[in-house]
Length: 160
Image 1: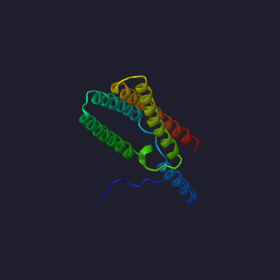
Image 2: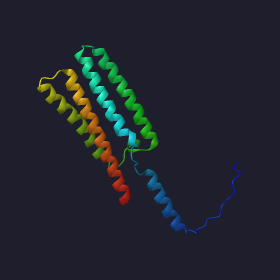
Image 3: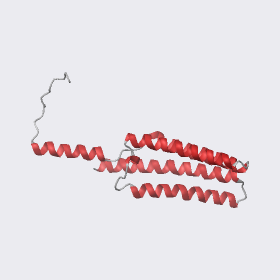
Image 4: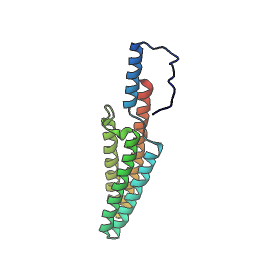
């Protein structure tokens, strides 16, 4: 039971105006929100550490450690994704208009990481440098992608 006192509205709205206002509020609630500022940098550091750790594990012939690092990175990534999803950010669910840019950003992360790993390996580096370079590249590209998606969301929300 509430002990609040009803407050009379200071502005009288017609039914049509109230419906328009409610529709705008629903649209604003469904609109994508930016990811938190820490999201891109956190994944950048995570990708970098994972790549460097994986490189050392493979170089030291400790393949079991590669599995442990992969499982740990997946668990932390899932937890961070859950936090951002609960917050209502881009990862909230399928957002029309952002699926394509988000997919392209992730493809760029993977292509860039594989490209750098291939080039570094071709130059004669061992697994430490190949995987480390791939991890740092993936981290930087993920951060760039998250920043670009946030900028797109800001532009679209200002234009609406």
